[in-house]
Picture 1 (tube, helix red, strand yellow):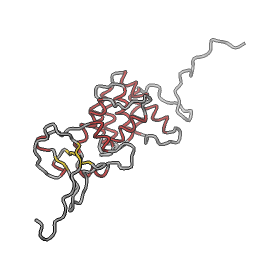
Picture 2 (tube, helix red, strand yellow; picture 1 turned 60 degrees about the vertical axis):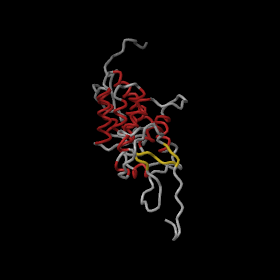
Picture 3 (cartoon, helix red, strand yellow; picture 1 turned 135 degrees about the horizontal axis):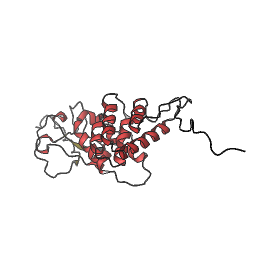
Amino acid sequence: MASSNVSVRGAHRVSTHEGGSASPNLSPLDQLERTISTCLLFENTFYEDGASVADRIRDLVAQCVRRKESLEVSALAIHARQVLHLRHAPLLVAIELVRNGAPVARQTVDSVIQRADEPAELLSMWKGTTERRTKMFPKALTKGISDALPRFDAYQLAKYKGRNKHFKLRDVFRVCRPTPPHPRTRGSVVRRGPGHALTPGHVGGRVVVLFGDEAGHVDSPPLREQTRWARAPAQPPEHGRGGR
């Protein structure tokens, strides 16, 4: 007859994927650090597929937020992006901080964006990881993206405008509605024209109001309450010899 009073030795043993002994004392934050630092998100590894790694990151971020460790998770995401130069894993951590209502979510989103195509990538990842069918995006996500956009100049915005992508640069501007940090002195509109090596302003037939002197060193009048999207002006006709 089988006994119900069984031995507890090895009942709570923590093992690796190969069956070896693992440390049972790792906190969720330590596990998250090891997971982020040793993976390329959504790419299969020897023991795990990419989806399992992403699910574990989501679960660990949620645990850390419940343990009041949002600031440490934010620092980890920023370290992974700016020091380890990982791309998608820090973006996923930032998204999960937003999803779990972390107070540092907006600042984390701003800090992990280092390339002009990453705002659109964040919106796409949010849509792909959200079960609810809604057109709305969390305010912490859109505000964080708005904070990051002024760091990019005209060339970067033109290079990563995502013409053939599901989320394009114009979608980012439409959703996040960024504003120049100093609209009276730093706003400028980049237009397509002959003689310009770059044509960065056009995104789907429109021009983008950029945010810095890098956009062309143009001193513009105050923007007041004008819209940040304007129809691209028609090119002036070329005059003949008798023209001005």
